[in-house]
Amino acid sequence: MLMCRDLAVIASDYIDGELPVFQKMSVKMHLIMCKDCRTFIGNLRASTELMKTHSSGRADEELIRRIDERVAEALKEGPRDSTNRGP
Amino acid sequence: MAHSALNEEQALVEGLKAGDEQSYKEAVRIHTPGMIAVARFYLDHSSAEEVVQDCWVTVIDAIHKFEARSGLATWLHRIVANRCKNRLRSTKREVSTDFSEALEPELGERFNARGRWELPPKLQFHDAGDTLMENGALSGCLDKHLSALPEAQRSALMLYEAHQHKSDDVCNILDVSASNLRVLLHRARQKIFLMVETFQETGEC
Ligand SMILES: [Zn+2]
Image (cartoon, rainbow over all chains, first blue to last red; front, top):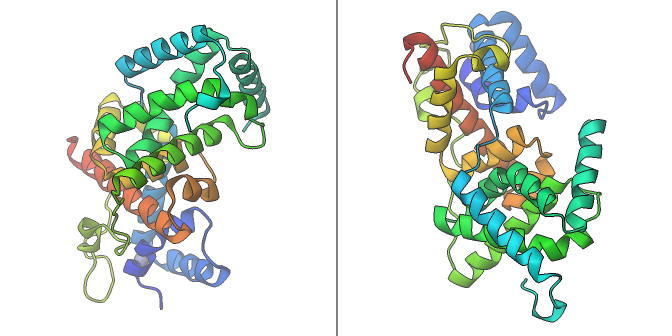
């Protein structure tokens, strides 16, 4: 039988719908009987949603400025000869 | 991708192909964080920034070969990943990551010998990420914990959750197997879960 610890191991796969049907069914059965695991899955799902809504990492302004400068320079140079183009 | 977002991206790509500086500025702002996430999977901080800068310059020529089959983000991330891999090959450095344990030790300790919860989660998190994120302190705490994640976990999480790439794309870009990607994601989510839990219980980060 699936124990709480086993469920915690495969919890992300369950949330993402990546479990084989049989395993998915045993998780569902377990969740019907176990309030703690229902809370856990709910909280792990909320944490996952939190990541989705949280900004995908803010860019470092200094880095952005440096890139803008290099791109502007390269654009001024115009299209480069394909023979000396980098990889 | 939603229809309007797709149109926006098409317009942006047209701008890039035309060599429009303003379009580059916009694209750099949108896509640099994700590109850094990819590069940091492979390289240290300063090398990662170097590679991403170089990539943007190569994009000026390469954009003409871009076909909308894959999204712009996926295409850019692949360019970054290839550059990083080339660089690693020349310095012979290996990316080493532990994929053996699926449970965070801190969570694993909360089960008894029979595999039942010894210390179950007490509080229920609010349902929507939006409600949680209205809390500025939590947002700051999340930033802190995200930057403390091992690089491999953070890159996987960023590409999969924040950029919503498909698993196949993430595996391809990061050069990990599907099962190892699952471990990276699960470990990272557990850390975020533990962080939010502590935050809700104690109000401290
Ligand atoms: Zn349980």
